[in-house]
Image (tube, rainbow, N blue to C red; front, side):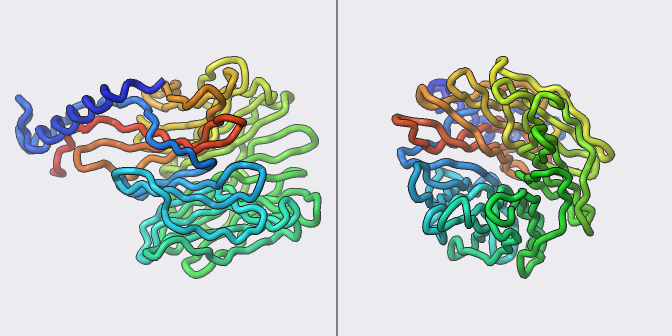
Length: 412
């Protein structure tokens, strides 16, 4: 549960005072310019935003500590509209008018902030006039005038879905998902690449009868990862594709749930040529276990991760803040469903306490860490999703985790 608001206010006042003192070197025994750092003290996860608008949030990305976006769509059984919220350093608010090209459905699934000369973010999903028969890829771009739709390929004659996006620079971004021909499939992996001028489809492997990509992360122009799963018969297998600067190829990955049904990857974050995480779940649907895979530059291996109980436990997204602050979010079934946040620290995954809204189900779908440090040396992490209110209506939820200010010495 969230701690009392009064305590949060007192904590932040104390933090601001501490930051001010640290910045001018007034703490006893800490001279100005000292290279000794004060320890970073983690603050608890707290609810940063909710609303009475029926909205499902699916993804989040931060440009810096003062700019972030969360994307999703309205809930309910009728027309879905795209929704985008923006963090301006003070509060979360709707980010102006957003295109809704579909008559029946508009559903944003992922967002990626990027420092480009003329724009600052991409958002992806799909729209439809008669879903599920004619879903089309949807890519939006944020520039100084707001959000506009950008032309994107639709390789499938049936439906085309984008689930995630990552941006590296003004001339390199990837959007991933899946498509099918006709009315029934089979589903095929889809990766679209932005080359600075247009989005184009890349050739991708399809090892199974049905193939799905859910998330993508870019390390450099010569290294990126896309994750998801594929099926052969009734068995689900983890799927990782690696970009080497020229083409996509399948990586060998563990499948601990072989023989029990599911092995699903839903989130990925690549950090360097020898460091990446992928998260998801495995096992039978009613008793799924969290799944975390680590890439050391050569192979993917499963790393033990905790579960809240013996019911459903799953991870949906992962974000890297520091080598000692990697966060994975999802849900577990209590019942009802409750938020699940795990943190990689001191060579272990551990469950962190995370708040829930109301008395019904809560879901976390995306997580993002703001790049770099603030002026006083803290890290900011966002997690987004939704909770169920009366009559099963979905309402948006954004959670915030911030480490306390710490003295960061100037470079030598």
